[in-house]
Amino acid sequence: EAGVAQSPRYKIIEKRQSVAFWCNPISGHATLYWYQQILGQGPKLLIQFQNNGVVDDSQLPKDRFSAERLKGVDSTLKIQPAKLEDSAVYLCASSARIGFGGHHNSPLHFGNGTRLTVT
Amino acid sequence: QKEVEQNSGPLSVPEGAIASLNCTYSDRGSQSFFWYRQYSGKSPELIMSIYSNGDKEDGRFTAQLNKASQYVSLLIRDSQPSDSATYLCAVPSGGYQKVTFGTGTKLQVIP
Image (cartoon, rainbow over all chains, first blue to last red; front, side, top):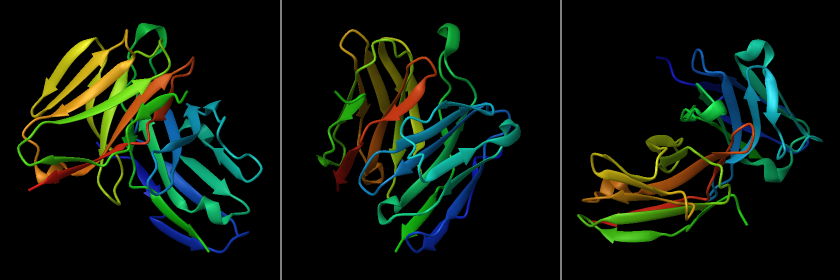
């Protein structure tokens, strides 16, 4: 099966500019995640979608970050305006099933990520 | 208290030794636990999933889960230099199973 696709792989922008990242999950995966990973830290969940609905965005800086998952398939994450501290790798992941009703969670599968540098 | 905690390391072990990586979590209701390996500059890749108390073995890797102590560990037997990476513990929790990662433990296997 095809993996999680992300683009672009690298992006360099100046502060206060805007940027958008795209993710196409594994076919049939209902749950899609966007993580931010700063060098030397673990991935931090920004937003989690179940189909096309948001189920967690508690750590998304909503004054500058936005995300959507139209039609419950691919997703875009946007930053506007960017700050220096947004320099990080943005990882998209998908999973087949959330563990409701006693079922186990399916593991996450990650894309290659987008490395963002804000100068 | 952090939702998922790991010792950041680095953990250095000689080649051929057993590496032991630990993770604690805060949500007693969590039912699924994942270990990921992340090489420098790469994305996390799944090593093990564990759902029941006890041990689960897959090749040189053994995951151990103790829900009463809210503790999950990963043992790597016969450690190889190619095992040098950061190991991430991930735990879904809450009503919508938000997946939280620990900070990761950096493992260095010395030839």
